[in-house]
Image 1 (tube, rainbow, N blue to C red):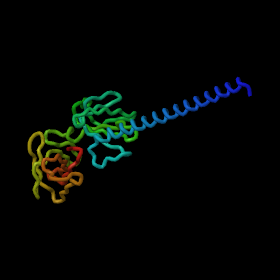
Image 2 (cartoon, rainbow, N blue to C red):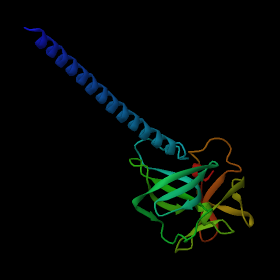
Image 3 (tube, rainbow, N blue to C red):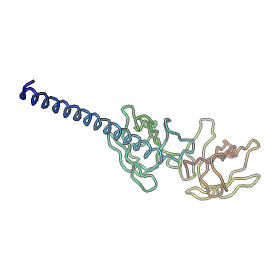
Length: 212
């Protein structure tokens, strides 16, 4: 083999080696970018999940966010949660609860979040935002109604709560039930929901972590 052929072979070998290394480098960069993108997506998910007050909220499941609506655009909601502004994109199927007022900026809302794409699926006012001066946030056609307020006192016979108009005392019904499984410690001064019969007797008391 003459000297020119040897030089040519060496040059070709060098070019192939350089190309191979470049290919490996590009492949590594691509894998690294994909990994970073995946980590970024996971971080985004965990960042929204951490604002949920639901003790049963889990990864890979839809969850609710409770906060004050700061701003709404056609594509996005901005909520204030624990003094932090949290931006949530709306899904294409986003909807509001029926009879929601047009302007609800500054009101407390509950937003359902799709776990897979981290978009807002629906929005509704919370019971506290819906409540009138007597704490009534829902009325049934049969006359029964729902009340929300701060628990001031509870005895064997009565429940006293505080609402914006003052203190309200309800007599317990014979079938009165209490649900505070999701909250530990003393119930006093906690926000509670009461189911009240049309005769003004309270039949149930519930403590929801999302109200606190």
